Figure 1 (cartoon, rainbow, N blue to C red):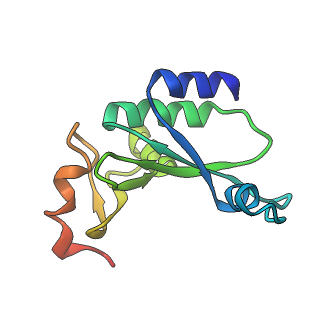
Figure 2: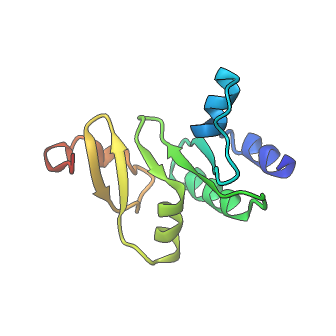
Length: 126
């Protein structure tokens, strides 16, 4: 995990823990179970940094599953596992959550997901 955090610092990607580990840390109450996963929020500046972060998350060797989101500068978020599927070519679009709603987008440019947010607001899933 130390190599991972050093790599994230080099990429200038702040990390936040949420979910059961986050609640336990904040409240002091028991939230973490044997089946709990580690939910990480990674704040990324662009698609290239998101790709590098995704590969680093995939390479993590922890005794529990790591889930989480990549949050872009505009506040839009994509699950890192979905972006990984796109990177492998198994999906053509990913689910993007934003202030404008939830929609599918193709992460094919450095402007992703900003250029899709307002354009897709009328077509949002939610």
